[in-house]
Image 1 (tube, helix red, strand yellow):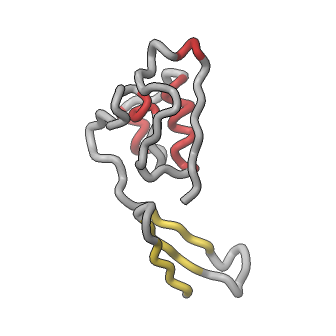
Image 2: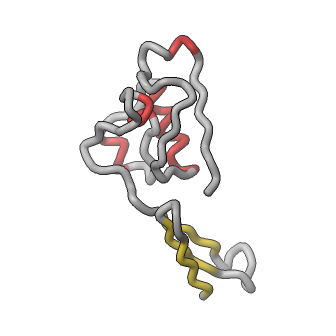
Length: 106
C-alpha cells in the first residue's frame, strides 16, 4: 500500500468540499492523475471515460464525506503487470484490492 497525497490550492477550496487532511481508502493508481488534471481544468466529460483508463479523483474531493458521486461505482481492484519487454527473466501479473495482492509469475 502506497499512499497518494493530494493538495489543491486554496483558490479551489470552494469547489472541493472534502476537508483538508481527510483520508479515503479507495484504490487509486497513476492512471487516475491525468483525468484528475483534466477535470480540474474543465476538460473532462462523460465521453472522456472511453478515451482513458483512469478516472478523476476529483469525484472524491467534491463530497464532504469522501464518497464519490459517480455514474458507475469506483473500482474495487486493480490489475498490475510487468511484461517481458522490460526483462525477459521477470514476467508477472497481479491483482489487488488494496489489502491483499495475488501475484502470478508467468
